[in-house]
Image (cartoon, rainbow, N blue to C red; front, side):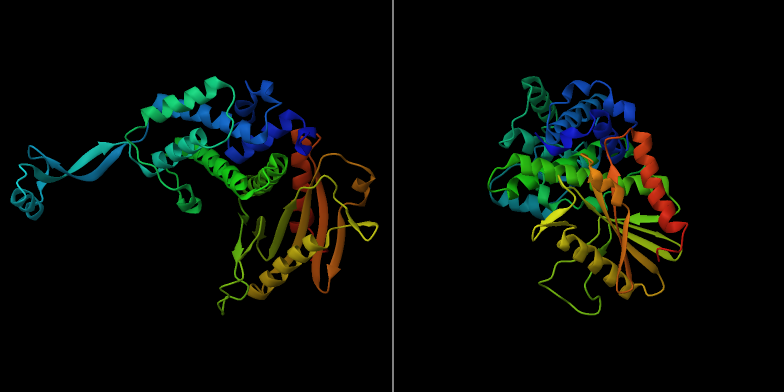
Length: 356
């Protein structure tokens, strides 16, 4: 059994609806029967539903420059190319013209994801769901595909013209993450893949909650160089899960998901050393680059099967002058109580100077 299946199904859909920025009941209604599906299957189901709705409403279209060899003039004639064609004995005219089509970047992303799902080794059940995806792909036959690894998600923006695409593009990003996890898992351990996938959902949920609830704060998944003044080609950038900045305070959150929060260290149950080192390095590096900010780090665990461990949280400590806290979010309670836990974290850090 997947660990996250211990979470009430309503809470799982609550988190998904936050990430997709959909009303909670919209995501939940009609899907309660899918409790036995894996998380990846749920995303594929929601993607198929959103794709059908999008096609029914009509895909976005715009004018694009096209160049083709035609028998009659259309648009502008490419004279040099047409002369070259005549010299080769062809009686066509090379024309450059505007074509009004759905071959748009966002539509290309959607078709590419749908095609990858159909032609990958992923089992899509029921058959009707796979049939629906195939039908929708055929409707998008005039739309080109793009390599999924080349998509720059952070550069995609939404406006009045394309805002109805926001949910399905977010789903596309989540599904691409899922496909990437599968491709990187050489042992085909789908349970491990699903656990990692839930971790991604938890991470996105935390970030989205703080961004939507505390809009006066700057909330992001910050990327940091180890030393901005030098180039380290072989060291990966630091990438925080959630960084919240309000006035002169910054909280860096690293989300974690384990069956048991405390690990085994030489026969004793202790917090995992690598997790503490990771959040410590984030905070220290951020302080170096933002010397005017008060900075703290928080390891935030998703708690599902609570034991007596819950009574030790929040756990506060200092590594030198770096404040580090370890806390949990109990995902077994009702959504309003989940929200209250997160709000208490914000209040503790941004309405109180004692931690810093």
